[in-house]
Image (tube, rainbow, N blue to C red):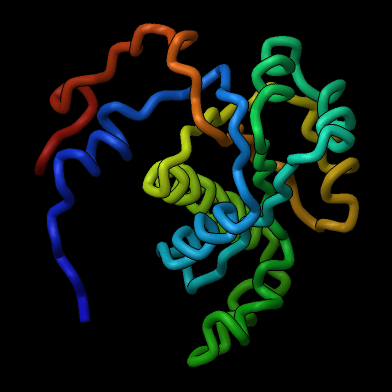
Length: 198
């Protein structure tokens, strides 16, 4: 049954209005079970033909953080090394191989086989959507997020996704943010600046 329940003001503030991009973190662990909960929320959001191309590595250990450290742009080092978790979002170019399981009522795999342009567009668009859903799911479950670019994509792929036929998209630090280092919120467009209703 479809539920169309308006979220509370508190929920809207948690997801959007008061949520910020954090650059420093409290010394508080993020358990593996919470990462599983976030994934289990995120995976229910829509992708084209349920293609679900996002692949993620969660970097938690000191040893793996040290591997990541020299691959980051200078401005991302401190905030990443202090974050309890760094999620590296990538997308799988062979996502369509899983469509017989994920979209079984139609032969959707055949839509993509041999069509490199369609594969690239679909994996990029839907992998990015899923990463956005992940951020909202993390916020919904009480975490703060610090999404970022600014790293050597090829070397990150080599280090953390050596067998993936795909690309790294972006990263997101996860944890419980330290609000003392937040910058003032940047301006946003008004509706009329960038939209029209026709």
